[in-house]
Length: 234
Picture (tube, rainbow, N blue to C red):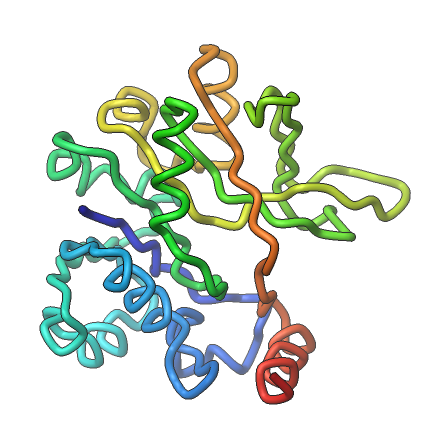
């Protein structure tokens, strides 16, 4: 099995915290966030991992090297300009044509068994499955609306609301059948704003897989501090 981990971003909202280190390399529970994601892949039996880089790429490459120390094989692609979450796939799609693959946002932290996602994806014969978690405030997330069978019929990135509302939102982990997004991906394209809405419009089988443990937010200094405190308590 294979996975793409998106790790090009700086994490601008974190301010000085990411001055000398990209967001995926911030430490949680004694390891960089990106390492947690790589180990999550290894546990699920994923051997080949593709990682895009942009901001301070040397910090990531010098730590993980070719991945052998972590039990995986890592292939990197450096983007001179950030290509977008989906645009980043352009360099890897030719290596993802044989079997379904995972896409993981490398600056997110969650404890999750990727094998459960694969099993669900196969059970509903999905073409593209998104891991969802419940959020009490959906304003900074991608909101998925699902039918009773779990198929997503509408997706709104960062909904504009006058009040705080809860809902099932994008956790930044996908499981995708080969070829499903290939003709939709272009430079600067984004999964949330471009690819997912087009998949819905084409009436392809897009499902949401709900997880209970959620996603630990680290988008701002305050959220990062709260996440560290929460992990230390647990």
